[in-house]
Image (cartoon, rainbow, N blue to C red):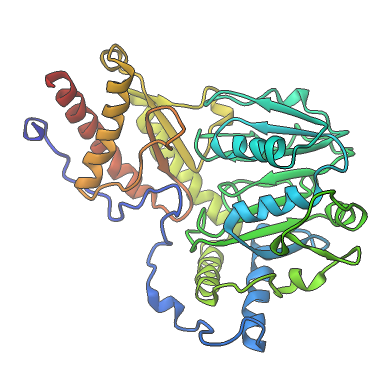
Length: 391
């Protein structure tokens, strides 16, 4: 029955709105990888130079302090954050926060895998944050900066005590390069290449403050550590890991791709330019949500609304009157219709999240494409609703 509802004329030039892996930078071409060091060891002089360049450019664009260490590690953000948890937690009590799928995954690891004895779990439902004022900074604190699957982020770093005694472990994978990060408040920060800058997957970044290094050199966890988690030897930090001497073999093709994204970030004005693009993207979506009566942000408090992974819920009264499984099917149908039209790929809600849509609005997306998408969202909703009513 799609023909009974008029389709908009303007189409997004790039339909890539996936929340990970995310859209490649505007104008991306595989020709950007022609300078990749292929067929050579990552320990060769040119291989190490590429890895060191990736670390140096990351530091410069993000404004990471000179006395913080940066490492390229295996297994994306997951590997980086697991590495931090397994090597540093257990030295003191920990408060661990979760309000969406990935943060709650870290809770599962801390409780069921590491089996930490002194742990306070602080959770909230999708769309909300735990009580940040209740966090105890005499303890270690583990949290995600941005809840990728809920569209909820911490508003800033003001809630983190400047006189904290424990470490802060921050999963910033959908926040780095898109949201200001207060480095003086963060001891461990992790992210992956395939998020805000649209790089390729499988590699993670681990950023450590001097306090985190001190923990690594003064504390030995009681559990065995796999080789890819080991950051110290004989009680001292393995400095080479933070100079591009990776623990295992990285893809130098992916490294070249990451360097390309960093070069693009420099070309648009560095971090300020990236933040500006994210702000423009959010305005395009926020303006549409404000005037649209069938949709709302899943995030309850606008101050905590994610600026990258925008999660939306359907609030149309006629849809809310339908059975839960019908509502979920309708949301999936909206995403499927847009996929079939090659207008928006991969914008369904995360599998563990409430039914709805999730649209990536990070820096590699163009605001004009988001503006062009919004009338199509209306078309897809009306089409899917008509189908459900006539079923």
